[in-house]
Length: 41
Image 1 (cartoon, helix red, strand yellow):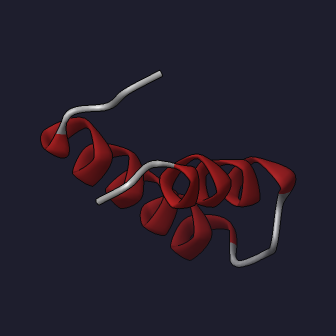
Image 2 (cartoon, rainbow, N blue to C red; image 1 turned 30 degrees about the vertical axis):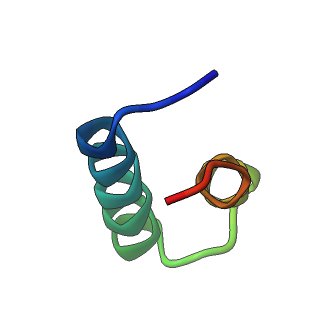
């Protein structure tokens, strides 16, 4: 699944806000990071 640059930024922003809000390393946050890392910026 190829994401546009804006979609990547939105996903990254959601991941960061999720981590800030819950302050724990959850599987959802890690999955977001894995998706971002798997895509080439």
